[in-house]
Image (cartoon, rainbow, N blue to C red; front, top):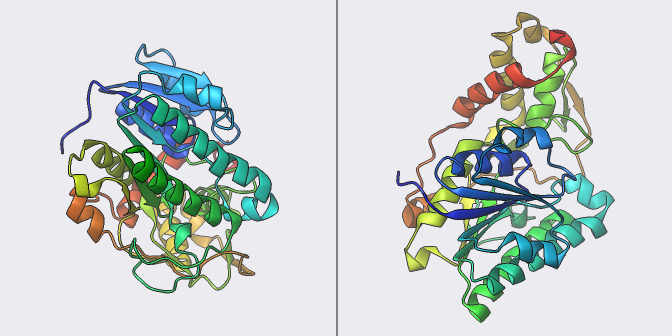
Amino acid sequence: MAKISNKKILITGGAGFIGSNLCGYFLEHNEVVCLDNFSTGHRHNIEQFLSNPNFTLIEGDIRNLETCEKAVLGIDFVLHQAALGSVPRSINDPITTNEVNVSGFLNMLIASRNANVKRFIYAASSSTYGDSEKLPKIEEVIGKPLSPYAVTKYVNELYADVFSKTYGMETIGLRYFNVFGRNQDPNGAYAAVIPKFVAQFLNHESPVINGDGNFSRDFTYIDNVIQMNELAMLTENKSAINTVYNTAFGERTTLNELVNSLREFLSTYDNEIANVPIIYGENRVGDIPHSLASIEKAKKLLNYQPKFSMREGLKEAVNWYWNNLQVKSKK
């Protein structure tokens, strides 16, 4: 696959899970600017980049337009990852979620438009499919949002579409499906399910599955997401721009299958994990039962060929977690 090189790339939320992986990848052949306020991102994710002369850290908030304008100076591509994620967080605090995800997004669009950025590529979300029960999820068929978070991510798509039509901006939205991999934080009230389960298993604690474990997701390894961001920058196909793409592997896995795979892979490092029991709890408010992406549009228009299946990615991720997570059982 062709690589983006000799460009200046702004990655908002660059100290977060996805953002820091994008920083590391694109820093090999480009100049990278990272904008982050460290509300959910971590300095240790970008520490190794700070001594690189091609890396610039701007500590600031996308809710401040001046900060956004400073960050986009001389930028070729914006990879906008900054957002407050988590459905439960948005239900608990819809105001802050809206301020960051909608007002902050609009600030970044305006700053990018004014700076004549070549293309604005942003993290959209599978939550946009809402109450649509159609499987697999096809980009043009969505339902009504089921959480404040989902509302904000859909509004992002609407704003991007308006800016492309009104101001001639080039925008591409990537609807991420349950991304996992290195640098994903297992701590905090809103931790994603995979790193949270891994940390619990490593501590010989029982993971808690919401519901009966038959809800399913299209779990997507981080390297597939990096590939999609690069393809979105590389494309010169006019019909591939100013639209949105599912960013996924295209297979669904139940939570029961996930937890069993995690136990299987982790047991190769610590055989006691094989005996850790699973606990089942109540379904979570705002959760959709099933999620599965069609990736045909991305294959056709961007030539997307995901390299990692869920299990292949999970093996990679488990190895990273084993080597990097500080847990009780390894102390």
